[in-house]
Every structure is written in structure tokens, then in C-alpha cells.
Length: 424
Image 1 (cartoon, helix red, strand yellow):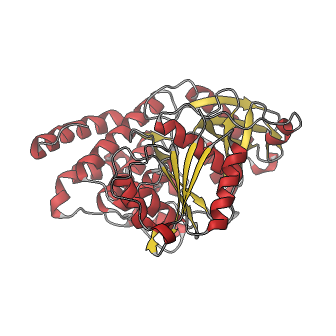
Image 2 (cartoon, one colour; image 1 turned 30 degrees about the vertical axis):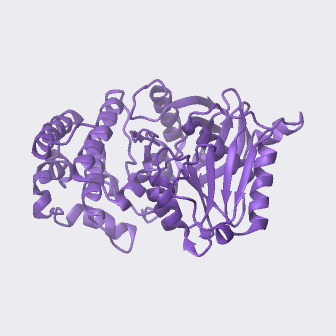
Image 3 (tube, one colour; image 1 turned 90 degrees about the vertical axis):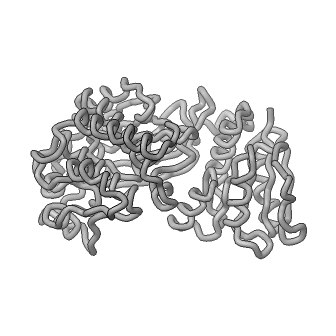
């Protein structure tokens, strides 16, 4: 079955450009163009049932594109919407995702591979079999399997998602399944950086973690090593991460449920001997069924920190979620992950971070020395869990995730009784 696409944009040349990208990425697609400036809003009874996906630009005949997006997202069983941003800034992306977009792409420069990948993700979400990709020439395969300086057979490059001093993250297509995956390439640090032992421990931890199967932990599909590089292939999350949910607002009971899901994932990791070390909303993803999933756990964060430490000991970045002991370079254990989880819990409840400052070191200082952030009267019942997660002294926190989970489950039962809400 081929892909069926509705393109909504007031500029005919741009609609034609998008149509050309779709036509070269799929065999015999069905493409309909809609000019909102000439034809006005879509009828109230338009369900979109004839389409697999809608490409919606943020310029829609004078009306703000977000108004269109919210309207379409409210319609029953409407197809997934890919939102095209003239100014692809993080704030605009987060706002669009919170309004119901499946994904956001830049309108300035159309990335063909990324567009095709999100169209396939939309098909999968719609419950349609993925359309067959346009056939490749024989000489295309080696080029499309290049990820930086590294060739990884069996995967096709789509786009680069992120880069740090020690790793690069790509969106790729698994040629065996045709599905989108995230491929992370990790470079071994130089011998004089003191990172070789950390790199080796990282590989060992991912070998352990790759065997973990849990609904709240990212699925690792593949793992490989060369002399100087390692790669990890993980599942892809078109819905994005927890940051957009926090910005849109999370009800207290839902925040408690999210906390439980993250703690259940941590329990499995800790039992396997793996610390997360980098818990933050950007590393908590959402599946299509709204299940939370932890990603990017293990020693990758530790390796990046060791690479980024200068001679004066300053750590680059803004460690809003680091425990006091981690921020000051002291030994960490499971209680450091619990601390980070507590900071996320506070942010879910309050829609803001508890400790902010102008520099990373000032944030680290506040984590160790500022008073515990209190909750307003209507949320006081959550303070015992919060304070037992983010106590300055690790000895005053939950000794392990088991204790945290017991407290969360008990309070969740109380909340259900208090509100009469049905369990999700």
C-alpha cells in the first residue's frame, strides 16, 4: 500500500517541492495539495480518513498554524500531522508537539531522508503497512550506510540528530525491517584523556543492558564494536520526550504515574548493575501509547563528562538534574539516580526547575547548599516523596528504588481514592 499525503500550505512552490520529495521517496504515492489562503479552513466534518498523514505548514492563510494544528488534533481519528516550521527553534517545536504534532520539521531546508522517515513513522502510527521505499541503485548502498567516518552495514543514513565531544546520534532506517531507528556512534577517547577504561566499562554495561526487556526501558536492537568506535542501535520515538509534556502541564496524578514508570525502569537497571547517570526530561521519551521510556543510560554520560572536564575541574553544560555528589565529582550510587528522579518529579508538578543559575557551577552549588524546594499547599501531600528523593545527604534519601516505589504506589492508591479517577 502506498502513502496518502495531504499537503496544507499557502505557497504553491513549496507545496510542489514537498510533493516532489514524497514522489521520489515512495512508489506511486497519492498526494493532494490544499491552499488555505484560497480555500479557507477545512470543513468541520473533515475527518482526513482518506489520508495516512498531513503535512501542515505554520503559514495557513493568515490564521496561526498552531490553531489549525490544535483543531485537527482534536478531530476524532484524524491522521498524524507533521508540522513544518519556518523558524525551527526548540520552543516552537515543543509548543507544536504539545499541540498534537507527530513530528516537527524545518521549512527552511527540506531534509529528504528525514521527511521520508517521519512519513513512514506516520504510516506505522496510522496502522498502515509501511510503503515500499523507492528502489536504490547498486552504487547507493555504501554511501547511504556512511555515518560520519564510520560505515555500518544494514542501516541507511537519514539525518544527524545530535553530536557531543564523544558521540554522534543519527536517525537511520533498518534495512531489514524498514523501520526507523536511532543509531549512536561512540568514539574512543585518546589514551591521554584517561577515558579508555571508561570506554571499556561503557561497552560492558551496554552488553548487559542490551539484554534487558522492559516496557519503560529503550529497546536496543543492535550493538557493535570496531577498533576505535562502537555503535548502538535503539528504538526511535517520533512523539519526542517529556519536556513538551512538562511545558503543556501534567496533572498531579499523572505526574505520580510517570514517576512510578521511571522508578520501575530504574529498578530493573539497578538490579542489572547499571546506573543511569543522566536522568533528565530529555532522556525520557514517549511511545505512541504514552508509556514513558528511559534512554541514554549507562556510562555514555560519564564518558562525556570525563572528556569535557578542563584542568580547573569545570564541567561544561548545565547540570540541572545532577545530585550534589555527582556535581562535585564524588562517588555515586543508586541514590544519585533517585535524586535526579526527584528533581524531574518537582518539575512535572511545578512546570519549572527547582535550582537555576547563570552558570553550571552555580547550579551545582545550589543543589548542594540551597534549601529543599517546598511545594504549594495544594501539593503538600507529595513533599515526603520529593524530600526523600532530593535530600542533600545521600544517607537521608531512599536507600534504593524499592523504597521509593512502595511510597509512590501507596500515594497513587490514595490519590485514586481521593479523586475517584480510573487507573490508566
